[in-house]
Length: 224
Image (cartoon, rainbow, N blue to C red):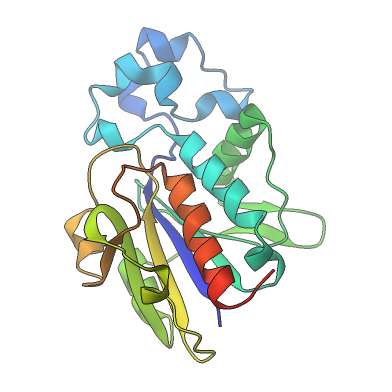
């Protein structure tokens, strides 16, 4: 009985080479500081307009808030939550449930930039974030005994959260949430499942959706 959370097409990447010479990038970039090497819409908005799908990119804060919510949950502490981050550049990372993500945003940005450069984050005796060398679609399809649920403001409005999860100890649930600010899932993500839900009549931030989905699962499975 595991909830497998995928935060997909996340706005998490290093500053692309094609905008490295833009004044807004030059102003903040420092080879000696990992945190300055991460694309951030708050700092690089004017430069990002030149990038393809720029509305999905440069939002490491979304990943930060989602991870804080997920890792701090009773579900994660009970050992029943797996977390994967898929980036807009098609990199996939598995998050160890025991990692303590920095609360400070700049420290988090530094950690993520180091992750993207090195491919993993390790402590003395364990790997805390590891890169998965696989295609996202193949990875999700390879997971055994699972039901795949997508969450989008364009999905079917959920009337009762008991529609989502059944107390079935033999089934894992794959939950897919967008880690981007605007736009929609790519078609290959949408093709993964015909079960696409919205949990509110309002447009919600990704970390609010993460929090609510985990809470629904905890209530149904009596995890406190």
